[in-house]
Amino acid sequence: MIVHRLSLEGFRNYESLSCAFDPGINVIVGENAQGKTNLLEAIRYFSACRSHRARTDRELISFGRDSTRMEMELESRNREFHLEALLRTGQRRSLFSNGVRLKTAAELSGILNTVLFCPEDLSLIKSGAAERRRFLDDAISQLRPRYAQAISVYRRLQEQKTRILRDFQEDRSVVDTLETYSLQMCQIGAQIIHYRAYYLEKLNRFAPDIHREFSGGREELGLQYRTVSGVTDPLGPTAQIYNQLLEHMQAHRRAEWESRSCLSGPHKDDIEVTVNGVSARTYGSQGQTRTAALSLKLAEREISRDDREEYPVLLLDDVLSELDPRRQEFVLNHISGGQVFITCCEEEKQGNLRAGKVLRVENGRIV
Ligand code: ATP
Ligand code: MG
Image (cartoon, rainbow, N blue to C red; front, side, top):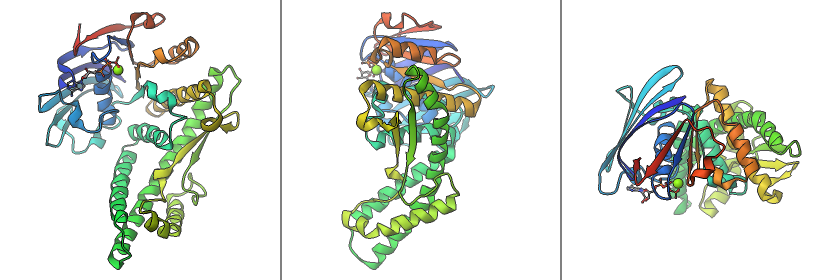
């Protein structure tokens, strides 16, 4: 996958930009707050259909404007695509692919795949389970549009059920409504668990090798999918998962009423990461957990390539400056083959990079 060109109109601090990229390594340099991350954010938007850091699309629109237009020309699956996103305040966004208006964001899925790596990702292992779930959700969604749909339906159900639980009264109609939500959450939940379990299998095919090489053969990385305790085989048939989810949810029905929150379901899932057999979250050193996080991200890139038969676009935001020279070296040795965008502050940081193109960003302009 190669992004050839990006055009922005009223996006964050970019009033107007049209920029061509190198098919290899693109280094984006500039002082703080000039628009380096904004540029990556715009590229990422076309793969995830949302920003990785904004809560709403509204934030992406330049101050003082009421719309933004983003356009991208790219090559994917040996085809040329022209993607366009039009965001307007108070209106639904419009997405186009080769001039055809898309009905749902899911239709955009699979055209551009990106793997984003930013400094916060280095604490992926030490963070709470929500961060690891997000990692899984973002990674799987890009490869499987149905998963993205399932996640968004599940979230909506969970929100609605939580709202009902919040002012719960033991009343026949309320209990019935809750039961309907529970059933639906178990149905969608079973699909989610199925996808996640398979993705974990793939992570286990790539990440431990990367981690082993990274640690000079001293460390063995283990990844274990942790889901609802009643589910005996997350890789098994979804009908079976569904039944087990239902059983678990029913066993926790009263507890849910009392705590007024959704206690049972894959919204509590986690990945248990171990290094040499012990929990990395609890016992891992800084270096070990960073290495493990890096290995997960690099594995995500390999999985995407395995699935799509071409490398996803790699977006490295400020990450090199956060790494010691040995880890920098390792990352740089593992990014050949696909298109890469790297942001950095000082010029010396790109010392051992064979940049195809250097883009200097200054106050929302490429100079
Ligand atoms: P750093 O090196 O600190 O990470 P950066 O170059 O990555 O900096 P960005 O995050 O890309 O910086 O850009 C931040 C700039 O964009 C800030 O000055 C911010 O005020 C501006 N900005 C963010 N959102 C908008 C918006 N909606 N409209 C206009 N400007 C915005
Ligand atoms: Mg930045």
